[in-house]
Image (tube, rainbow, N blue to C red; front, side, top):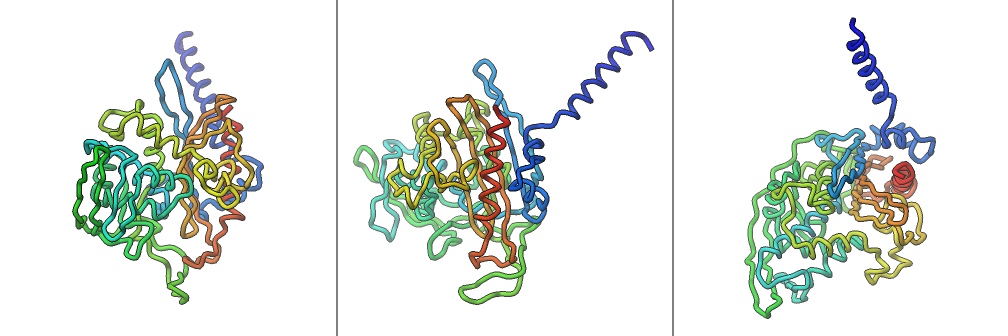
Length: 373
């Protein structure tokens, strides 16, 4: 072997050894001695744990991403809960951007409800306290077909919204008539529309547990999620990327909203309940901020901004977040989901949120923050 070939051989061997021996940040965090993390990782299959961590790479005005994942699998179903409100809010604004003489300050009414609603107010509620009714109000303006089609057009797949998060008939495919009051004083009516019927999902882990409550009656059979919303973690994470860093994506992959509207959505995402007019005793800072602060009711420091959306229902806790420390120049993205339902019964409101999932999310966020410096 020539001297040159020997050099190349040893160089490649050194690089391979260096890469394999150097763990990524997510690996280091999940190997932590922190008991709140160790316990969940040790039982990750039971908790149906999935995580995405993204390093933000900035170079001369451009942004790139380096993703690290743990047990990420879109074919393994989890219930997305309120995370589905993220595209509902954004796409309501996108639809507004296609209608002349409108803005987020425009108002609207929904057939059967005489109250005038302001888009900006409903969006603030969706992010500040994850208000179900506010998201359903916005949804009547968009509808199933519009949201599903727009997500597909932007490459945000797989994804399917098949029901609202409030109302007497959440899965009713008929969206109500909406009257839009434009900024120039004119009025436009959007008639009721029957949306395409949603087919049941075909995925892994759609049937969960050993029973569920139907009213006050225990039904002793697994709970079927095949007719629920579907928003896998990677699609959720990529939605966040597009609203925070649109310049990193092709034109057809971006949300078609004005920069002013994007800034409004981002402001609403990071805004704390006390700054949105809610009682801080009931709606403390971490009410909808699980990463880093979910296990505490103390105020979140002013230098840390969390642009996020959480979901919590049926024992499943999920969050996607862009976390920024303006003082210490730290930024990263993280999304995670896990199921806590020790008794295997759904709809009984007996889930280990406070004892397992919230401590895990908070510890995971803090460890990632510490290792992102």
